[in-house]
Length: 438
Image (tube, rainbow, N blue to C red; front, top):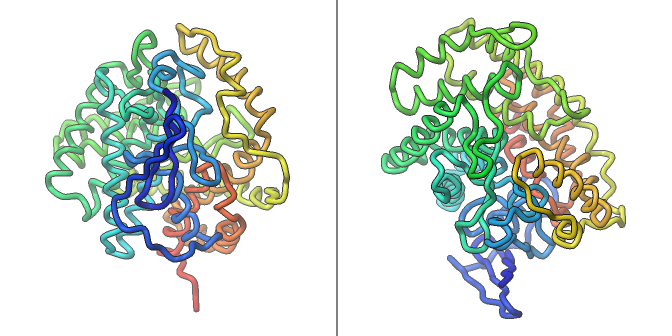
């Protein structure tokens, strides 16, 4: 039986099954009227509609918070596709891991119990995504209505932010000794599984693996180095640092460059005109490396990579002005109507991706506003975060006004896709580096 979850407030969810609506509330719901623009509006809207009852971020909802999750049966059958692409639980690990940056920064600023509780919910959500499969090291994208069912393939884009988010929480003053121990166990368990597979991401059968941190491109080198360096920080095991130091100079790829060379060059685009929204996961890993590194020469190389990445991302920042809020074309959240008629069984990752690509074209026909939000919100929003991950204050000052203009450009209550979430951590980082002068 299909269940529809509906978000009412920070603390309330309802589930609608066979026409019945049952509310579940954790605390009293009295709240002041929300703002509609700016980073506070981003925060309010993300927590009003896009964080599920497990602490995992949902990709898209209707404007009233209604979200039609895939059923357990659909997840098991690979519907709409075995990758789980283009339905509401596509990117829970990816988005939640990166959004942890905002949660920790917000609590560090406020020291408020409510902000601490939100960061803790995100942490628990990330751990849950690593606990729902019998496959060692598997990180799920999200969960179905039963809280456990999921799609059989994750990815490097899901797992890298999962590592990043847990590391950010672990390193904060929020984390209790018990939480640090639990997080450490998950990180060790998952990293061991990935290394045993040659740095590939575990997937469930019949797929086995999908994606990885191998190779010498920007989508691999910073992530691989970050995992090693992070594991040394979390476990205190010197062997991780030895592995990391050796890996810095390892050469490979067509140009026989080292992992450090790749990091120093910074972000590159290779499969689309821009893809800040996926590349920012590697930039976040690079920022983590910069923060943890104590060798001045290596740290400086990481810093140059972050500066180069920020400069490339800045080219996408003005795109937000092309978003027309008055455009009448719809964002149709009925993913089944567009994609399910095209479904067929898939036995390989390639078959699943080919099906998903065909389904996306059909989905775009009934939901053309999705493209408007991905092109003119998702890309500049993630670009803003990339810029603010740069430690060079001059870069942040150069783009501060435009990032703040971006944050004030949208009425977030009228957006269906959660990918405006990057605006909150970008503004929080900007506030620390370049405070607004009153």
